[in-house]
Length: 542
Image (tube, rainbow, N blue to C red; front, side, top):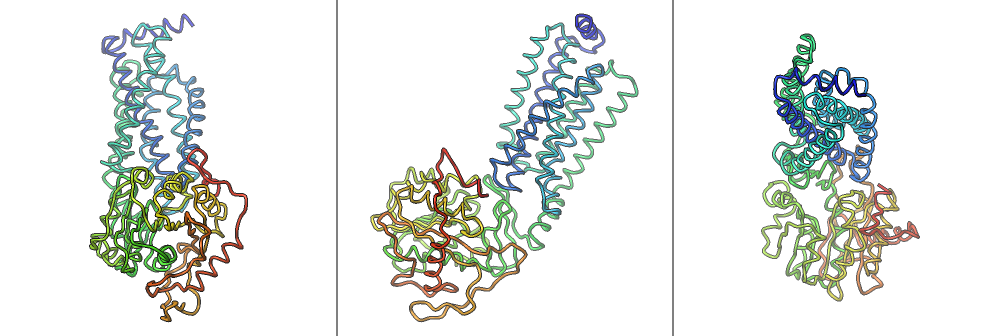
């Protein structure tokens, strides 16, 4: 060991810079490489959550696989310590290429193959192995440039590594994502990674390299940077092609907001589809049926003041405003971009009947949970039109604590309606929502509505006949059913129905609604515990 340390330190005389300068440059490279490594890690987690869903599971898979792979990489790096400079240069070039292109490959796999789980694991393994191999080689290199004991070298290396990880972790959400997006951000990070690793080896440690090794490293790093730069130049064309593969040929709007990706497809209001983070949220072919089932049963009673949680597309508000005695509607939507599109996009604004022009509507851009904690108003009707509870980011909006806040916001005879997911396809999720609503202090009445209307047009209580909704193509995109919960503080809750002054509906009849309540009761899954902030349960059925 003594002979080895003498040999390592003896290399300092061959450096083109002073030992202290060389040590600083090595630590600067550690800082940059650590920042890039954490960006790759966060990129995998973010993209896996977006493409696959369930962010808790995806983060757990990526992080655990990466940490395991880093240990494997550290062991494998022992064989490269005799050639630490060239080994580090090649590892950084490989890491830059694999990490920089990871987002591109994952998105391509999702768009054209429909599968991203295996690529996520593969990239986590590969990137983890390469990151794990860095520290042993950098330990060898820093001992060549400065006469420092092993303990001090380790402390310096890890300090630079952790600070770099901090910078990379903060740069990803606050700089790279908003300014460059996921694909371009990963490609630029890879180019920076290749430039930093290549510059360190080819300049500071060039005397440790044979002429052949210098040429090899130069060509490899230049090739990696050219590949990443070319991909960056073509990334817009790639995104358009991938979106066509995912959403079809009629993508009109594609916006990456600070909250999610918002995509509108279709040529007019009758063919419009709205996707949020790749999930179909609104389809003009069946949205009337969904929103009629969501809104009108809750409007049976006092309805002067209405609160809509989510629903920034304005479609639930459209149904609410069909009642002349509604005095005010508050829409709490976390993503202002959705509300803005609902105001300005001709197809979406046409579909919601330009509701945001109505002076009775107030749109609030806020997280529903946070907003409810601060709001002191009482509402006759609360409509929860939020993303499904199986989506981890929305889990707190389906918790017992959240429904407790809603119970406090309800007027004495107020009612709540919740979109709770399909009771047949995801029974555990549906009945966990029901248990959570009850744990929040509300009595419940579940009901389900098939996505397809009955064979004969439903007859409204007033005697008018509603026309059946026009159905879109199949292909697994359209849901088979929707499940809802009608709730009130003053239970028991009456059977869902339409009250006085209810308008004629397009595709939903009162008898079908009551049959949906009876069917939901027969499907009841007993023994479900409520979901709470401390113990979220919906991911178990996702």
